[in-house]
Image (spheres, rainbow, N blue to C red):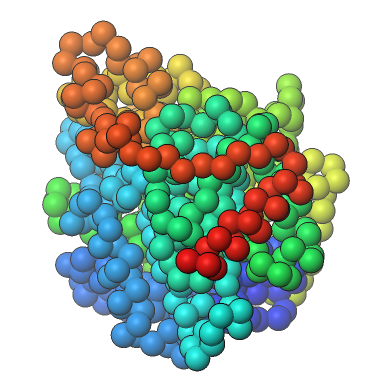
Length: 505
Ligand SMILES: *Cc1c(COP(=O)(O)O)cnc(C)c1O
C-alpha cells in the first residue's frame, strides 16, 4: 500500500489524504511516495487504447490506496475532472514536423488555457471530496473548511480559481500585484462570479504578495481559525495528476503517427513539477529514452547539470531575470528537492532515513549559503536521468517565427512552449530520435511575445486566428476584485470579512 513521507525526515509514513491536505511537510520537506509503484507487465498493450480519463484512473489507482478512496469514487472524480477540457483527447499530440520527427503535446485545453489545469482540475475535486467526507453529519460551524490563500504573477492564480470555484467548504483568495499581470490573466481571474472565489489586487510587487501569503501561513491564530491551505506546485497531487499525460502522449505518438523509434521528451521547466512527473512515469516503467529540461535564462538546473553546483547565483547575479516566458522565471526549482531525494537515496545514503538527513543538510546549505555542491558520483547520477538546454529570449522568438513560417506552417507557439521546442530542435540535430515537446500554454495568453515574433508576417492575424472567443467576451463581463495595500493585517481583515459574507449566503 502506498504511503508518503517527507524528503527531509523519511521515517514517518502518512496517508495520501494527509499528504495532499498538508501540502508542505512540517519539517519543510515535500511529500513523496515511500516506494514507486510498478506497472502491470502487459501495460504497453493493455493500456494503449485507454482514454485519458481511463489512463488517469489506472495510474492514480497505483498511488492512492483503495481504503482511502474507493475505486468507484476515484473513477467518478477523474472523469469529472477531465470533462471540463475542450479536447476529447484532453491533452492531444500534434505533429510539428514529420521529417524531423517532432511532436507537440498540447497541455492547454483546460478551462484557463494553461497546463496547470491538468493538475488543478483534479486537485480541486480531491479537496472537496476529502472535506465532504469529513463533514458528513456536521452542520454550521462544526464543518471542516479550507481557506486557500495564494499569490500569483499569472497562470497559477487562474488555474487555482477554476479548480476550486464552487467547491463546497472551500474558499479561495488569490493575491496579485496591481498592474503587473497581463490584462487577459487578470480578466480570467476577476470574471469568475462564484461566491467562494476572491481576488485581491495588491498595491505592490509579486514578491510583496508572496511575503503576505507566507505571513498569513505563519499566523498561528489566523490559521487555527480559518484552516489556511495552499495549492502551489509542491502539492504531491499535482505531480501525480501530471504523470498521466506522459503515458497518454507516448501511446498517441505510436498509434496516431506510427513511430517506432525511442521516444524522448523536452519540457519547458520552472519549478520542476512538469518534468518530475516524467521522471516518475519512467521509474514506473514507461520506456522514455530521454528527458530534457528546457530552461529560459533562469537556468539554475542547466548550470547544475553542467557543474554539480546548484546555486542561486549565476555568477553575475542572484536575482530572478524577467523573460518572455514568465511562468518559468524562478530562482530555485522547488520540486527539484524531490528528485534530489532519489539521487541521495541511491548514491549517498544506505537507508530512507539517511536520505532524509542528507536532503536536510543539502537544503540547509541552499538556505544559508545559496548553494548545494555535489560530488562527481551524484552529478553523474543526475546526468543519467536528465539532459538540459538553456534558451534565450532571442531564440524563443526565433523558434516561434521558424515554426510559423517553416517547420509547421501557420502553427503558433506560445513563448514557454517555444523554449521546449527550441531545446528539442537542438537535440534532434543529426539524430533519428523522436521528440515530444510539451506545450504548456495557449499563445493567446502571451500575446506580447507572440506579436513580437510574428507581427507583420504574411498570414498572421492575432485577433482572427489566435484569440479565443472566450477571451473576447471578457470585455462584456462583470469583474470582481478587492483592493489592498501590501500589508498582511489589511489582507487578513479582507479575508475575514469575505468569509463572513460567504457564511451568510
Ligand atoms: C507553470 C508553468 C511552467 C513551468 O512548469 P513547472 O512545473 O513549474 O516546471 C511552464 N509553462 C507555463 C505556461 C506554466 O504555467
